[in-house]
Image (cartoon, rainbow, N blue to C red; front, side, top):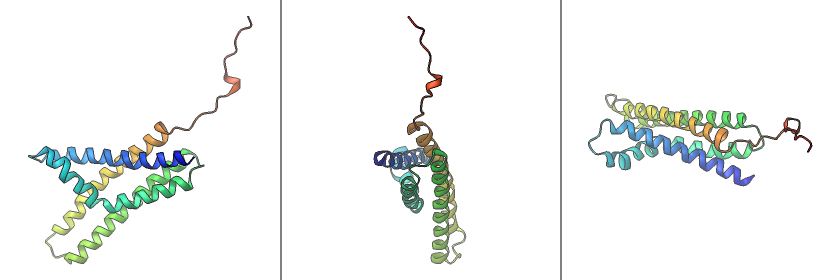
Length: 159
């Protein structure tokens, strides 16, 4: 049971980061002259810089959810992980907004809130990547084993 919980946590977070990195990288490549610099430098800055709070909070919530809901059906785990992702993104955007207003005082000519808008756009990408990862892990990779119905087993003809 412990191995399944650890595997669930690592796969969900790992697949989410990989998908978000890929999509954010492709989006950044549309306006870049240096593809390597974009994928290796700019994309991680957006993913871990602007969405770092959301990733940290969601990782903690996925760990708690995987442990608490380990004996529940997959639908419960999927719902809990997706709701926790939305909560983590809301916390991230809220904290960035408060930090921007507190440091800038709202007087930066709108440039401070541009960072919040970029983080919100990247948060949408993270939400989509997280949804795909949770569904993939819970329904395909760690699919619950089905119990075979003995009545449905084929009957062999007597020899």
